[in-house]
Length: 276
Image (cartoon, rainbow, N blue to C red; front, top):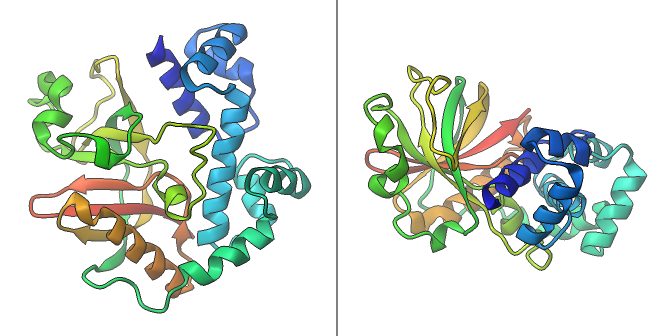
């Protein structure tokens, strides 16, 4: 039952910018609208529509803090039909208008010198796939994170097919958490996706996945890449990347989509998806 509601929660995350209703969600997971409302509330202690609004506003807070997009553009990217409805919802959630929220964070985020010991660069990747399982825990609370046997325990039968895959996590909440905009009071569930990042020669479309896993297509895109030594350095790498992007003042800024961490041979790599 909870797996179906996990699918519902992921669908809400993936469609924040779209004008879709509870009937669309019910059709997606094969439930009735009343079943979705009841079981989603049992799982997350909040209605699907209220959950979606909180996640929309968290993304809006990230875009206000970390991009030069104007408020009308941010409203549209976060699924609001107009500037005024977005501003009212944002004020209710954060007790600041979007403009005041942006000004409040500007001085705290735009430090002149990023943390030392990191190097960030802008790169482009071709389209790939990930195989992910969602856990409702922060990465520092997941035992064995990055251990290949832990990540791939349920994917062992696929190892001969996916020999060149890379261990990966995706972090939908880390940017909102970094700017103190994560709504932990209403939603007590930090999200971490764990799994495999497929090589450019792998394709999982014809593979039957274990029930808790899903395929995620990653289109060709640009991202900010920062290498670091261990998971303990994740938040330092994140801060460095954010300050690097803010100080560049060019066309590249965060898209609001989940950052990823890849386990490479001798280091970890943080990737933050960008838009121009």
